[in-house]
Picture 1: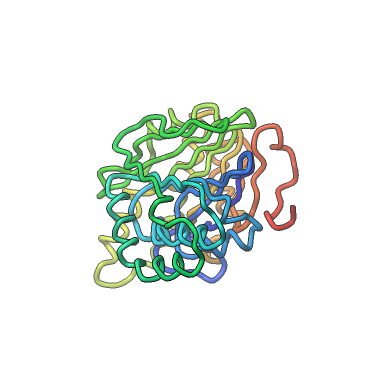
Picture 2: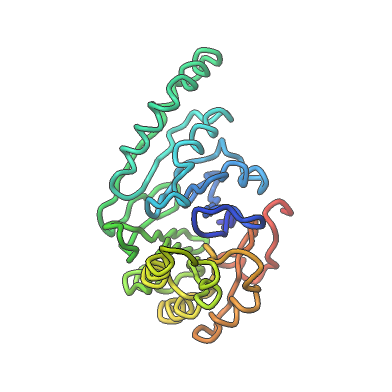
Length: 293
């Protein structure tokens, strides 16, 4: 099992050094992408991950930075030669979003189908809207389960856990401190958790709506220290901080790491785009960028 951090920024505004949120699990020839932020297909190309191997996508919630390429990534996988079914998992409304994308892209789909003679793209897509905590997939030696995390105003925001005989990885999605996430992550090899740095946010939340935005950030997200608490209480092996807000140079890797280390004494990784995180028996390997493999 490979874990590749495709995009590690958080929020809808692009930043120079980090791409929008997305991660990939590569397992037994299948690619599973968790969140589809803008540009995820290019990040896969940069990481050397074949889009034609895309087996499934998993959306944590419906903020734009997590789902803008929900339709685009499977479409590009299809143009790259994918003909097997692609499963699309996400909160309620994900199926409707997929149908809306198919309507928007209908001219492109019709033209490319006519000129290639390949299987019609809509036939390849299989949607599952997730309303509650449960096992959503179990095949090819990989088990995927969910928890409901806390990210208002969304009624359903999801964390995902991936288990195989090669290790276990949990993704928090966007959430405040969440007991449900702690249970989902219990004993996992790796926890990928979002993180904000409140002390650095004040200067970036100026203007008429600054107070409302700051209240949202503090009430609906998790500080690096609280991410460390979650990791400690869940007993995970490695904590990976990602979806970093702010995602620029204003907060150094050392600052992120020190904040998490105040509450968690295990391995801490401040994620970078295209970084591969060792999982399970490979946890002591040197971390590399995916394209170095």
